[in-house]
Length: 66
Picture (cartoon, helix red, strand yellow):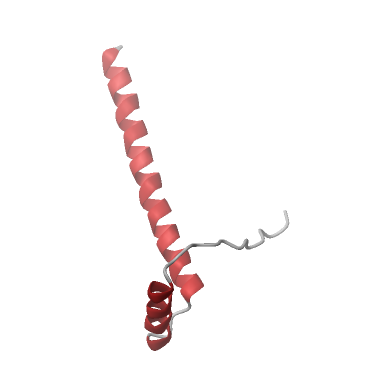
């Protein structure tokens, strides 16, 4: 299976916010793309956990109704 390719993702941000965030990342030796990727990965992991909890609760409720 070939390796997945990265895709470009465009965001609309106020220039001031982007400039300030870029400065923050530069001062802290952080790559903006990697930082945003980490935030996305964390959000998705939390979402998957909540989704699994809801699914488990629904299955438990269905079993108790039978």
